[in-house]
Length: 458
Image (tube, rainbow, N blue to C red; front, side, top):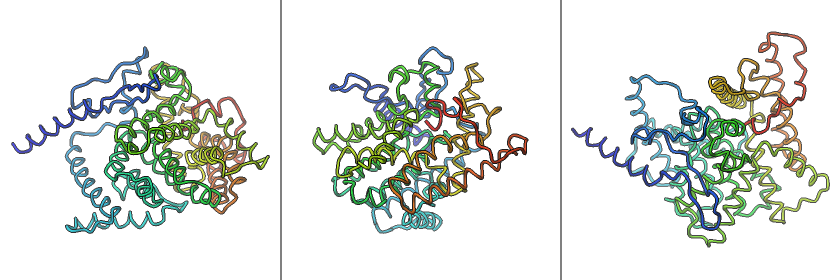
């Protein structure tokens, strides 16, 4: 009877949360376009009896994005999963305590102490380029984005400087983490945490460290944490060709990036994280946050790279200029977003496998619904090595070569070194993948398929 009562209360709470945060589209009086769109959580809807909305004309759109990469689980695993969630809450509570510096009045289980102790040790080396975000996510029991971002906000003194309410900060970060689709193999909260950690590494670079303002740093960290918020696990061309309502809303232009930005603004307003700041300052920060997130649109890669190269050739970058600092923040976020090939092989390989798995999932859906299969998404005609070598050659190398010109430091040389070694490792795997041993050193020929618009990690 007691258990039944508890589940009844939980059901009521879920219904309340649903009606409080069902959102869909909100409009702002100063901008009569959609301010933000929040995809409904299928887990909430399934509990309260709602079916996924059918938007657009294509049959695929009746499938909820949150189930795209989900794997079937046996009913027998449910009790074990609930037990793990209880332990997760226990560890999350303890990790919150050590971030606040609160004493452990009632020590929890020794295993939880051990896990949190290891996570705390890792945070002390959060500026290391070898930081293992996968291990950190396990030690924080899936709360890597919340724990890491909260630590960095405190590390930079931003909470005190901007007089942020800790309860609002924590609620905002929890909602951000929840709005990532962790069924996505790649575009999930762990990726966001990894990008945030990389952004921290770049913010510490001498040129940036001595020039950026506290507001720049706050925007950089918030943009990194939210840059892929509510990513559906498919790319922009897929949304466009299925006539998805997001593509219609944003007129087929930076569809995902606009959605990530608007979703982030929605959470900032929902949690009232910046409500104590003057209205003009809040709006300015929201616009600048959008400018940073929109810069991650891979289809505009050449535009940003050309501008960056021109500045470096003319040697006219002045970080005392606010617009130049913002541009460098954009480039730093772009680097952080696609820095996986520049990580040590053990980390880089895992990311490569995850992003390719996500591409191939999309390709399978396209085949199922008799759509044209997007470039790089056909598992029968592409291998992980093919995808990664093309990505490194035409996207990563040009960007990080220019970043090294701007910030010629040990970190830049380390990243280029890892990139070279990782590319060689994938090249060595090509004969196995293709069944041929001829010319393993050759690079793929440039083609229109090598860099489809918006297809790579977008």
